[in-house]
Image (cartoon, rainbow, N blue to C red; front, side, top):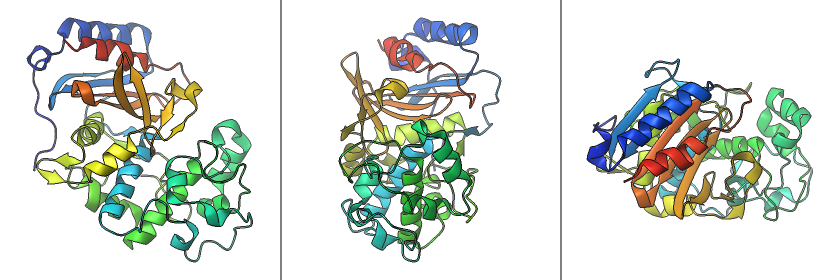
Length: 322
């Protein structure tokens, strides 16, 4: 089984080494929160730098976890474990819906959770709600008890709670713990063993974030998406799902990262007339895929509030393509 990508010098895969070196100097000089920068092109790891961490040190990917959750949803659909993306959510959560009060909840579908249009409030704009949800004794039931702030399917509200509800749906559909399903369906094909994943008080992995991967493992995730769901000759997730997940479905919060479109738990943009698919996480965690350039880039950062460093990928790394 192939694990890490084979390596090649930048010039061998059509990358300008001087541009990449300049990007590295910029990070080292001006961006103290960055902890890694990796670039792969044409299926080869061509550039790899670490800043204050070891290559083998798992990083808190924060909401990059959600993009992995999207792939797990696609796998569950591919296997017939779920009836379809427009299936209402509540019937897929037996024994957990006793807290539902809003009469619109029965209309919330998997697609609404995947596009952040369920109507759940956003934790990003309400820190008190965020704390209450995250620290509750049962975050899934807490989410289901919330009054929706808009009718399902009508407005984007970035929701960690919605992603966690989706994780509970997947666990029920797979008839196993979410982390066990992820290991069998996604991590084992990628050669990744039991990545650390924090759990809620009920023992469920937090589907909204916190999964810990090394930067090279994050790169494998991006390369899998670039290869339309195939890894080492094995079909992991269908190309149809990858295409659906990485096309824009709704406008997102452009103020978050300057990324205008949202797919199915993936951010979608065009930069320099080039399509880009992003998995992002708080603190500067990025898996960026540029399909037209056959390019994948990964950056990680300290999990704290600091200015965005996505421009290193958007301009400097992308600009190194010859």
